[in-house]
Length: 272
Image (cartoon, rainbow, N blue to C red; front, side, top):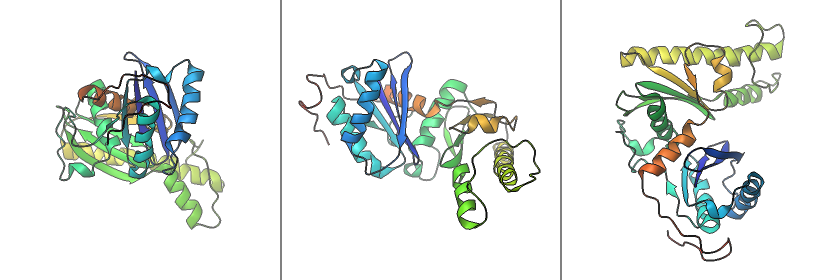
């Protein structure tokens, strides 16, 4: 089985794929200083609860946009699962061209989204990922990655509004009943929700105009389904795109498989 780890700025998602389907997904708050042992205590308990065993995991793959978190995530794979993890980097075999000025600057999550979106939906397309940042990534009809757009995420905007304006409260994200808010909180919710709907529609329109041909639009991230309720622009929402990208990348690139000879605490893979 494959352990896929998607480490974002807000959460780290761990998922298990058995070769046919995803058997479990769990998330924990991203903290760069969290040790491999802390991850292990948490994750092994969840595996046991799901009826899975650490010894069944033969491969590991990590995609991260938080470089400081990589050290302990790699140690987790080595020490607790006897696996040398594949790290998602622009230098791997992605199966498509990365047609930007500096490929090494592109976040792993954006390339993973492009890989999985083209595999499942075919191009040309735009993947919108509603995470800590809201990203728009454009994929050509042959799967090539063409670049994209990065905007502040919804939660960042809410926090900035709350911190910069003394009388504005911190609010939750939801679709307001009306555009015109009759009090402060509904007015803020309207600005956030419809403001980001307008952002999505406006940027997609400009991307399509610049690309010069129709583009499918796929939304991912925790807020994709909510925002899709407010606009017909997003044709598909898919919460598993980044994890699917990790799975596909692991299948394209060789990962050393360590034969399990002991439970955690025994021999370790010490490859650097």
